Length: 374
Image (tube, rainbow, N blue to C red):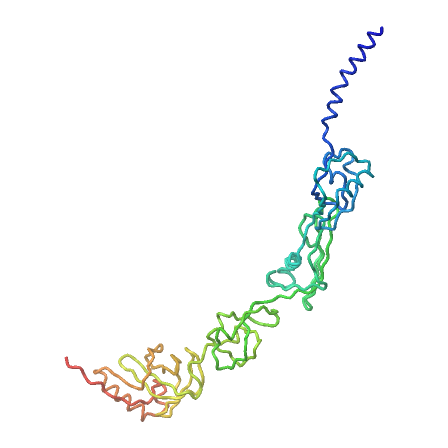
């Protein structure tokens, strides 16, 4: 009987030995040197590996969003013992760093979201041309890392007269069925890129590169098509303007090649006949403009087209467009046309203005070019 009892005990001990050996290989709880959390509390399972059933026990409040806190090993072990967590392996760790993850919204991100919500609405243009100013300074915002959704506008208000906006946004939250809500108010003004004068400019001056800068101004301030810097260089203003004034396309004119009361060269040219004489401009004009000029010899007023600097070409009856420019007071005709040219020149001196109006030819001094021997 005794032997049977001993055999039974021996068998039970033999069966119990493997279970005891298996317990010896269970991993011991081990402290972590660096911890990352997403919630507002730090739990046992965040601090140590192999925490078992104690993993969900909260032990610390998490650092602020996007920041890192430091704990000494002694502090951590003391708190763990208070939670009945003992036997933690620390190795050579001296301190534990705890970082709380966050989603960061830069002020530029919020500004872009507001501009996108207003783009091409309420009479506004592209988001890139909207200047956003918030009622309260919007610095970098940090949200819980679970806020992974995009900024979605759910309510948008805008007053076109004052430029004021009030927009509500929602952000989807992974850890919560309810989205995170944000609201911003301020002013949105549509701007345009325009050439601006860097100094006072007179009407007669040609615009140079140094006279212009490129700036963004409110669209309402420009009140018309804005002039680009490249388009403005080399042009003149319709009127004198002060430094700091934005330039519209309507403010620009081609430079005057002829100025009122300026001495000019009057040209008359038709096939076989080329005449020039001195004159005085009665009005200013750019290249291609039609102006009135006074023939200083005949004292007659003629109408011609500005074809160069200080140069006006008078349209003849058989001439459909201004011909090549002339720079000297001279005349030349083909040999075969000498009699006709002489008669024409004589008529320019003697014929009344009413009869000469059809040809619009100024009085000239005529000289016959020597004939070439054949």
